[in-house]
Image (cartoon, rainbow, N blue to C red; front, side, top):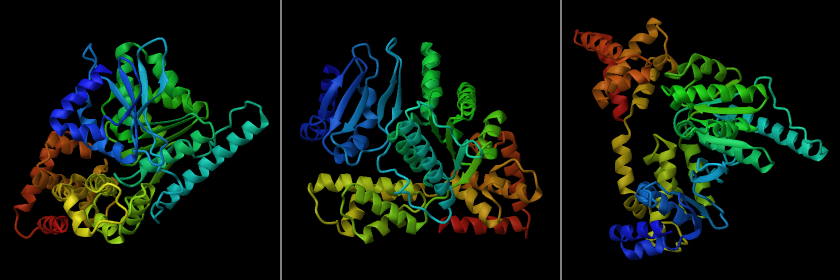
Amino acid sequence: MQAWDQFLAQLDLEYGQETVSRWLRTLKVLRFDACNIYLEAQDSFQLLWFDEHIRSKLGQLVNNNQKPIKVHLALHEPIVQAPRKRKTVSTNPQTSFQIFFDELDPTCSLDDFVVSEDNKVAHKVLEELTSRLVEAKVQAMSSFSGHKPAIERAFLNPVFLYGQSGSGKTHLLMAVAQKLRRVGYKAVYARSELFTEHVVKAIRVGEMSHFRNTYRNADVLLIDDVQVFGRKNATQEEFFHTFNTLHTEGKQIILSSNVVPQALQFIEPRLISRFEWGIVLPLTPAHKKELCRILEQKALAYQYPVSLRTIEFLADSFATNPKSAVKALEALMLRSHMNKSGQKTHLPLNAVKALLADLIETEKASALSTTRIIEAVAEHYSLPLEDIVGKSQARECVLPRQLAMHLCRELLKVPYMKIGDLFQRDHSTVMSAIRQVQKQMSLPGNDLTTACSTIQRKLSN
């Protein structure tokens, strides 16, 4: 507790005593030990403020032995809870080693997922799978047999979702996990970064048995963004055996990635083949109509009054990534709450623009990305995205891929090694490909120069 008080005293100097007293000293301390402190927030705005201003500074919070103290923050009688806070769900009483998981965002549900024409198949499959699992659990409980319900094995294990950032992968995984937990399943949801963190810590302190018991005793395992496993050999080894154990026992596995299994980079072939055992389902980012509905639902969940003009403005200003639009809405809620506590009516559009001016400028600056470049090249040549970033050596794929590499280097100054990671090539191959493109473009009257100019004009619009 002394470390927390000292931490607040440091923040007094940075934010002022009045601000710290209002937003931090009003947090209720539920309990604490040498390495953890459990806090309770009064409302969702206090959670949002903590995330925006304090979360990144928690490295300064250490105990007497200079070890970091983990902060666990929850809502008092929550209606809406800020996503992705840590809480202890598995603790080994014989050791200080603990496994923490992210809390699930309670606004994520299958019913609230905005279904588009492109995403309806994935949503329908998960909805039906979840319903079958819930029905099996209810029947098992009503029979008092103690028999664990069998998992549908035919073609639904694993379920592999893939799509760009903002396509709804995390929403669906969290929604399924929450629905299954409510009927008694041990549904373990983890981001791939967190799974890797658990592996590394368990190896370091010699607690692999505790790690394995935690993951391999799950009824349902949901892992988000498995592309992060690339180049992490120890993580892939552990996940391979975890996958085999659960699949052999008929436990459900649901995974997500930003690309199809075949396009995963630096992932062992034995894992890729297992990812394809079940069903692979695509997701696409929301278009403006769906994004407006997502923002309306988020505002409604927070009971925040917002006009249709503001919703459309956010959808237009952050059109490249729905996640950015949602974060902008959350920032708007927080900032307007700080400036005008107890707001009952929606803000005028000019006030919204003023409050979000910094985020809008950041969005404009970062709008051009490697993903946008690759998508633009794929669209220009009428090729699937997987053919551009994949391993195909067909003539119709090689030149567009080389042009995409050239544009990533020319427009964004991306390092050769990073470009190689994007296209599953080594940096020398990338350098050679870019030189070939530049050589061709130096010749008069070639089609490649025209294509490059056309794509660049589209990217600048």
